[in-house]
Length: 141
Length: 410
Image (tube, rainbow over all chains, first blue to last red):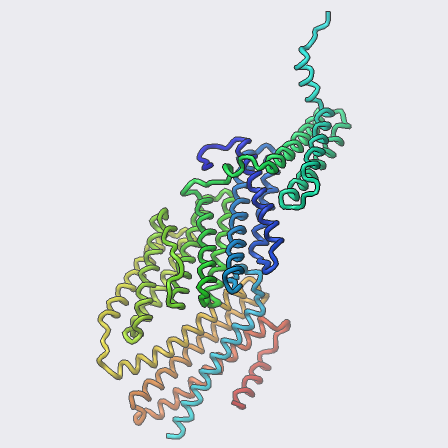
């Protein structure tokens, strides 16, 4: 159902029912997942729930267009979460369970910053060693 | 003789009374409860949630029905009707009637459609990387995380009714996704995923940026294939073009379209020059090559260091309390490192050219300078570390002492 015109209450209700059902299925499938709890999916579910709640509130306030749009936004989050869950399920079954992390939350900045600082220090130490080597060669000449 | 209403109309009017409607609500709750008894799945959990919410509506309606005012009556009816609506929705979900036909299907060219395309592209990319076991560097991973953030941002903008901005943010996400895809492909020497279909409905401006990236990475891939032909001049031009392309994406994100045009044109010109230099690479002069090799190596070192600094700065900005100060120290460290590496490159190039006899003194001087510079780079890096990771930073003089001690022991 592609919408160019203004949706009526029936359209909004149908969209709410569909998105809510899809979100419930995603939540259930995600809870059943034992091999990995991806933060990105957690966020998708959280955001979709928020938007759906707002969509219900809009409908209660008789704001059909807003309800319709918010349910659409909830769908975007739900669909993204579903895709990621399915992709990781396939990687789990067929691959090596080596997942590409797309969520920022799971990268604690202190640890990562420590690693990067260490890498920089290593580069400095290497360059310093090279300079010292050249210096020693020059002294020998 | 009193006026008698028709019986059907009387029945209907009775149903419109709040009490009758509350009865209807309670009855429907009971029916639905019956339908999901002994069921423990996603759908029954959803229906239970609706029942719970309908019960809340029912309670609110009953409270309102106790007050005999117009406003309370209206609120009472509204609550009941919404409760009934929730239960109808739950019934519809239980029977799953026609719900597949109602899947949101957004019109092409809308921001929602673009957002769906991005989420699809992100997933496709993730799957391709996981399947082919590609190596993804930290900075490329961070860029992918940024693409996901932009996807979320474009949805947030949709919510605030900023359709144009949302679409623009989505286009920026696509451009960055394309760029990181090409980078990962270069690193892994293989093509991983086809995302060309995403550009079919793109407007002129982002398409010109994408085309610029495409030409640039095509040339970069050719250079990777024949590194001996890729002189420092070619590499520098590619780097300069890449900087301009990155700036053009940022300008596009800020809706600075005039600047986008200028940057893309300048970048395309750089790519053209780099391509011509690459095709007519002169590899006759041995000394030139030796110099170029040394300078290339020091250029690589500087680039690697710079990339790591940039990734670190991006990571800590907005997160670490002292990020601004730490970033300044990192900038200083980078400058010192650059200077030290280029001095070392010069010394090595001169050594290779066997010119040492006439400038031994000069070289010794350069070495001393390089030593001072690299020590300064170390010092500033250590200071940045203290600002970022130590709760209470060590005083500057203590760091200087420590580093001096360390260099003595080296």
